[in-house]
Image 1 (cartoon, rainbow, N blue to C red):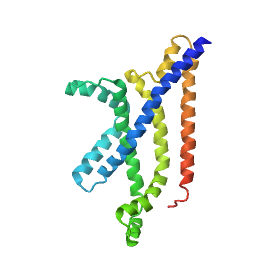
Image 2 (image 1 turned 60 degrees about the vertical axis):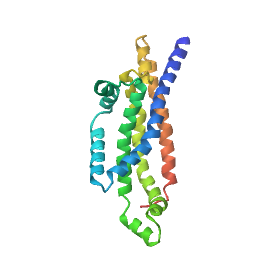
Image 3 (image 1 turned 90 degrees about the horizontal axis):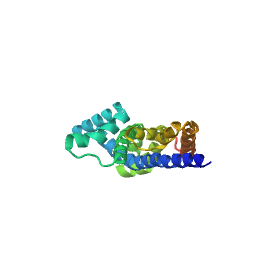
Image 4 (image 1 turned 45 degrees about the vertical axis):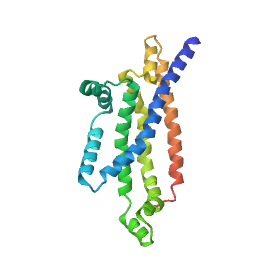
Length: 215
């Protein structure tokens, strides 16, 4: 019984790191992604080019590689080593997901026809009023499905933290396989399934709330 309690306690503590990575990534990547979107959509060509190149590089390289780069590059290139492996993981995740979120934002904004902007201006609304009163909620409705897929992927990607020694849930479970116990490893799937199940219900609720926005 004590062995079971020890394993469950270890899995719970490990999942705490998964949750920290998940929530911190969302907290910073969502607004950062919007900033990147504005940069990529800028009419000032240098800013647009730099931003889109940055997004292309981030989306075109593995997150695992980016974690290693963030962890080791500052020390090797700038003689300023990362003192915390968790911080390096968070920085890599935030940058990676901000790039992906920015493309989802951009796709949602560009999917709105110019006629709606023009119609709002004909009614005497400013550009900001048109965006916040007419366009914004339509954009949110359109980006919820791809955003939900990306966020669910984020839940599973948090397990990549183990490659730099962060004791997330799968790494904790793997330790018990050396003691001849396999059930902790399978139990990690239950943690992820429950977490993703809750997120699926949440995003389903949000989609229904925006069903009255047609088009």
